[in-house]
Structures are given as C-alpha cells and as structure tokens.
Image 1 (cartoon, helix red, strand yellow):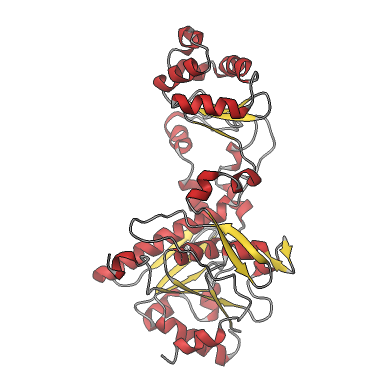
Image 2 (spheres, rainbow, N blue to C red):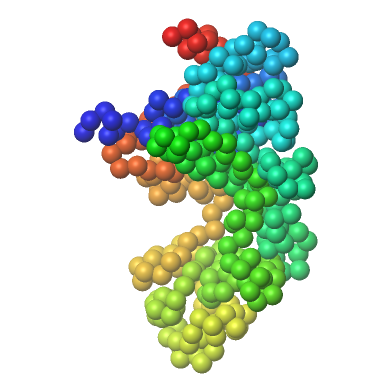
Length: 386
C-alpha cells in the first residue's frame, strides 16, 4: 500500500481555527481526526472561553480537553498590529479559516469574507452562528439551548405532558459542528476541482430544522404536531424502552417479521395471534396495551437475560447504558471509540475517538494532548518562515 493510500484524507490541509466553546471546535476536532493541521488562535491569557468550564482535573478543563486534542495553540491579540500581522501571515498559508462569532464580528475586526477572499482567494471560510448571515435574526446572539427551543426539538423531547426538555447533549452546537465539517470538506473538494474558495455559512437553527426528521413533513402535509413520547417512536411499535426485572431494555422490532421473531423469543406466540397486533399500524394504535403485554413478560427476568435471548433470535435490542456503562462496552472498545491521551496536567485523559473509519487508513494510535494557551507559538511562527 502506498503512502498516499494510507494517509488520512486531509493530510496537508491547514485549518486556522478562530472559534471557541463548541460548534467551531467540534468541527475542527473532526477535521483534525481526518488529518488536517489545526492551528487554534486564542486570546492571550484566558484562551478559549471553554477553558473556564468545568469539570476540572488539576485546574485543567475536561470540557475543553475533550474537544481540543490534536490541535496547536497560538495566542494573538488582534488589537495589536504585530499580532494581526502574524494572523494575516497564517491566513496566507492556511487552506481554511473557521469562526463561530456572531455575524458582523469578523467584519468589525477587518476579516470578513469579502475582505479575506479578495486578499486570499484560495482561503475557504467556514462560519457557524446562531442564525447565519441572512434573515431577520441574523445578528441575534444564540446558544445551544436557544436553538434547541426555537428549532422544535425541545417540544418533541421528554415524557408526555412534561415541561420542555433539553436533549441530553448540546445537539444545537454539535449539529452545527457536523454540518460545518461537511460544508468545509465539500468546499475543499470544490476548490480542488477549480471552483475556487467559498464561504460556508452554517446556522445552528437551520441545522435543528434539518434534523426534524419526518416531524416537519407530517405537519406540513397532515397538520400533525409532534409531541414528547418518552422513548417511543412516533410511528413504529414495539420501538421503545421497556422495564425488565432490574432495569430497562430497548426493543426495536421495526416490521412484522421482527415482531414475530420477538414474540417467539419471548415465549409469547399469542402476541402474533392478537388481532390488535397483526400489523405495525395496529400495534401503534394499541401501543399502550402492547407495552403492558410485553412488560408482563419482560419484568420476569433481568435485562442481561433478555439481551442474550433476543440477540440470539436476531431482534434489534440493547440496554439503556449510562456513560459509565459505555466506557466498559466491548463494542465501543473494539471500534477505538475511547482513546487515551497522556496529558501533562491531567495525566491519562480518555476521550471520544474518531467514528469515521476509512479502509486502508490506519487508526491514529497517538494523540496530542489539548494544548495550553500559546503552547505551540514557536512551531507555528516557524511555518511563516518556511
């Protein structure tokens, strides 16, 4: 296998990361996992805002560490001409610049898209903000929680009749970071085909709307408004978490064949003969009764037993794991989804690995620890002299 075949796909791509907290840094972490060099530009002294977010180990933020490994850091004060000169030098050698400021901020600094594109025509510009460059909300401030609420996802999350419930992770930021990554990779491809550099404009609210799945179409076509269902699926049954004798078990029998396999595996062939359960539409219409019927059986044994029985029968199922359980899962380990990093402050740090597996490209075994503010200044300045 040649070096080109085994190299990560973004090897040789340099990304200038002006972003902070989560959406932008999550994007640049993914780009780093794909082989790009990430130069993180931070404020002198304090650095990225998330360095002040807990929890902490020996004074270092685990929040920051989990999203900013495999990056380099340089501190620049953009009010100082000398530091602006350094930044502009880095823009001259970078392939991509990433920022997640409110629209208009980069223009005030003198680094808006039009200005940069005129001076650095090959520089791709990636921006994530609450509402994007256009529209009546463009200049508004936004955080993850704001767009979760505005995008409809909170209205569909939680138990029936519960107050609005935040998704357990920052899906507003993470979704924007994922779409920004896709946009940047697409822009790199466009540039490689001779299409020139472009600006990638990602709005957190747009991304939440894009992830509404069929709930949006169901409303626009049928007038059906999605509401919280707990763990249930809005259209499929059985497709939820059920109580066992010791915990919860997810069963996802998404068609009639799987329902029959499940009924046989549970020792409940009577379920297949019940006229209320003969089709998915009927099972969904009688979902409360179906839950009661299934839990009469499932509560008799622990989750571990049912997992063995149902998996042997080919029925999609799984436990409801805590994060502690996830760290011990052999499938997670086999896929290198928790990677160790030796950090000089924290000690051994274990963080999420790269979920993008590419044939012929070996998994990265060693990772750079999350940098201290300005830790890589000398190495980064050396790039300007090369």
